[in-house]
Length: 43
Length: 379
Image 1 (cartoon, each protein chain N blue to C red):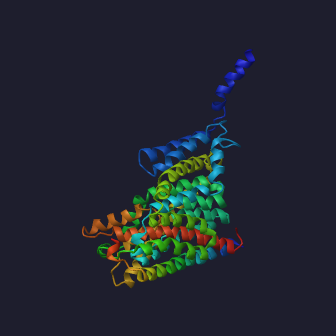
Image 2: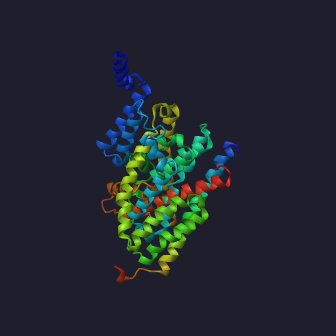
Image 3: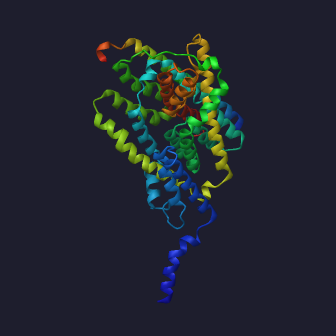
């Protein structure tokens, strides 16, 4: 694989993959916050 | 008799006889690192053992890095097999409160943007002629996360370990110097003045307990090659949040982290032998590492600006600069810069959220990178 293909693949898959993974994580954590809301008793 | 005495005396001066210019330069580099750590308080926990290890390995004929040398033993024990960075990660997980991130999960995205410098620098390093895996190791400096950089470099480009580690830890400590000018150039007065108000969202214990488990399963499934990184930081955090293994949590964040930090620093210093370190490419790596962290900051601020637009002006783009992994320096920089323009602007907790997102982000970026490399058949 030439360096050009490698570099572009890493940029697209790397940046895209990181953003997508963290986006999914933010969605899941938002959902969990709604499912298990903070109750004053916990404080 | 005379011969024996002359031979014995020669043994005492052999070290000086074999001292070449590279050893002398590297001993001064070691002294410089010690000075930065001791006098300037730049990451002293790492720079002091690194600097001393650098001096030790550059004293001729000491054989500390030869077979069965004590630094070689430490190196083989935990750096060549990536154990030390992972043990450090358990400690980091045990020390980190991800509460501010969980209060506002959208800040995960800022943690993603804060890693883009990794991939941009990787492409630039390739353009400058570095081999593929060397470029990966150089790019990972942009994770702004010492253990991650060491984990990836020790595995795929061990000959660059000294330069990459020194760059990663030095630039992490220089974040308060590197970021403010970039923030001022990229943001307007109006943006910097945006008041975000106090963070109100409390997080339940159940959510805090589920966080490390969910992140491990999702992240590990997407990027299994980075699971050791992700799994260890999340194990540390689970122990912290569970509250039932306080002895293990304390040991992870204190005794284990301290001992491993000492061994890790010495081992990294031991890779800085003159003949391996004093090359033009080392200087290039240091420059690219600096560029990587600048690009991280730029990308974080730009995504902060986008989020500001999408939120109707409710988000201060300064917190985007905190999306890198340097915890908590980057969050403090955002808070300090925000207060410079508006004394009523308390960005710290919001920036802490982005900063914690950056910690997860740097690990995810490395994990994604390794899995993409594996998918392409490079590793």
